[in-house]
Length: 147
Image (tube, rainbow, N blue to C red; front, side):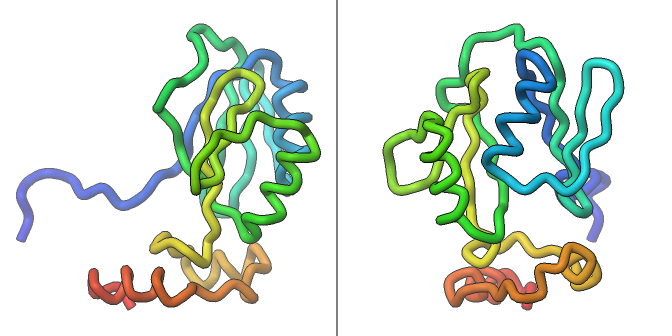
């Protein structure tokens, strides 16, 4: 039954303010495998299959305190190792949260551990067929009737 309000169905992209785009791309490439980047003046768009991360040149605010967003990866331990190699600021706690050089707080989550699910054709296109949801994620999906 419709409430007259549109339903939220996903996130197309997140936009982060960074200092200089080339430096930001170099940082994010040192942590993650970037398969595609499109550029336009003052912006870079990092491909994530059916979504993207937008980097906007010109940080105009202080570092984030609690505001953050989550990036989904295929290998969380590899992300931690890359962050450690780059001597990135990893925040304390049981999660894998880090600050990029411009103070953007990013939480890294493993695809297998969360309810977020890409369509089968997107999974194939991204060559991620080897990823299988873990039991807790499957239970979360089952509880919502999404399995």
